[in-house]
Image 1 (cartoon, one colour):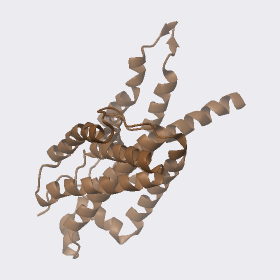
Image 2 (cartoon, rainbow, N blue to C red; image 1 turned 120 degrees about the vertical axis):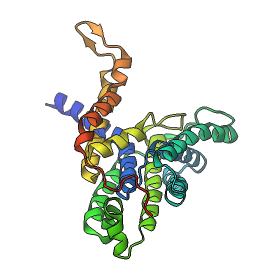
Image 3 (cartoon, rainbow, N blue to C red; image 1 turned 180 degrees about the vertical axis):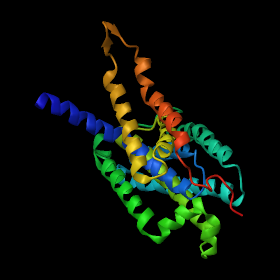
Image 4 (cartoon, rainbow, N blue to C red; image 1 turned 90 degrees about the vertical axis):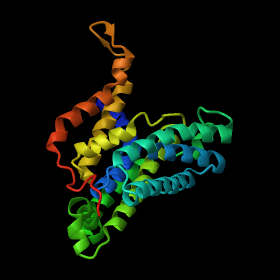
Amino acid sequence: MTEILLPLISLLLATLRMATPMIFASMGGLLSERAGVVNIALEGFMLVGAFTAAVIAFYTHSAWLAAFVALGVGAFVGALYALFVIEFKGDQIVTGTAINILTVGAMPFFTKILFNSTGSTPSIPLEDRFNFEPIVLALLLVASLTYWFYQTYSGLWVQFAGEHPEALASAGINVRKVRWVSVILSGGLASIGGASLSTFLASSYSPLMTSGRGFMALAALIFGRWKPLQTCAACLFFGLTDALQMRLQGVQVAGFEVPVQFIQILPYFVTVIAVAGFFGKSESPKALGKVYE
């Protein structure tokens, strides 16, 4: 019995660990997109958070302070994104792509200034990193957002901003302010997801360490039909595939070892299949991507 339970428990814990960064990012994307602003910049926000947290944790020896600073920096970048797409009415897809490209190029620049290297940041000691706290925070975030979305007036405002902004404005609520706050919080939460990569799953920042997790979080958002609990379940599913691909490396089928490259693409293959199979059945917020005048 123990021989069966221990591997299952190990797989469950690995699933939770791998899903945690995506849960933070997807909840950030949920806030933005339910408010009507397309957010494909989640990958960039996560990179910013991962780099910021790694630097702060290295210098201050505090993972909590690193996460807090990453939250602030992510919120600042989210504010820049909101400025361009809400105030300047820029194309949300193009602007989000620009944020992603900018962060990919900017992180090696800052790494060179701080550590005279364009690669990874210095390793963070084990005692200065998180152990299990990000998992608990991610699950609490999902529960809190679920309650807030459906049980509070401000949560309903966010939903109406993405569904019927005109009706929200007729009730005397400033739609632009609602979208501003949602996008800023989106950047902060996605950055926390990045921080959990460099101070929880890994011990430093390395270039492109998100490995597409921001886009997987966006896929989970679509897969979960823009609802907190379903989106979290989709993140756990993608986390399971990620955990499985690490355990399946070196497996043999009919006496032949499966090439590791085929195993490593499993999470991304599952993501594509999930989105392709369910995108047409998912109804996005009606005002998603539409500029509010």
